[in-house]
Length: 288
Image (cartoon, rainbow, N blue to C red; front, top):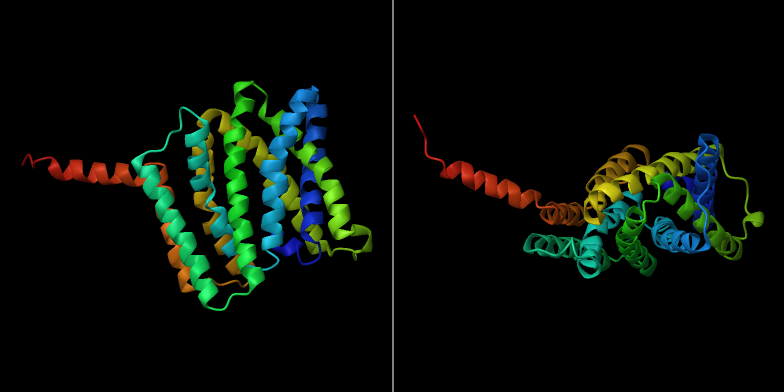
């Protein structure tokens, strides 16, 4: 949907539309439900920092990146989020420490990314293409910091709906001057109906509803667990972009994403548990 919207709408304007429409939608829901809006200057400062890390920086980098690379390739780099989350959580928390399995996962993921970028460079990728790929990697790093930082909202018992609204409303305020300076939206032509539909889906389904779920799961499952949702991101994005955008991936992209997915499997202990279970079953003697 971002790739479709970017046909008519420049990246910073798309970020502003995405977060502001989502913020209005959640604000109306909070008012209608009688929950009220979150208050307190210190709390809004925390919302603003969360919005910067979780919305403004990664959305801007990913949307700009997709003006130079495909949605499927951008999603591969986005799947690095758990790798950064694990590293940051190891330093910043006491209960999500680095293990051997997680270290192996990080190594596999880094090899996968290095393969993708390295082969693309040797195949004559332009400077903007490489910068776009690095921008998507930086977006994943920002998401990783945000996942760890967002744990404080659960500790303060702030409702997920309030957190989602607070960070989106804060991002809208921060993004407004950025959009005005970079895109001069008054000088742009009117977007097509298709682009507006893509914007609304991005804002309401992929942002407003998604963030309510995000902060609910973050409170219950922790930063590392929620970051593992990116198992699904590249798979779904690659399938959809191939069906609707006619994008294709090269061999090095397929190998790279395979290494990244193996790394994600090592991160959450999936591969170690499968290996341990298999060895245990083989060690049980036959009772016949």
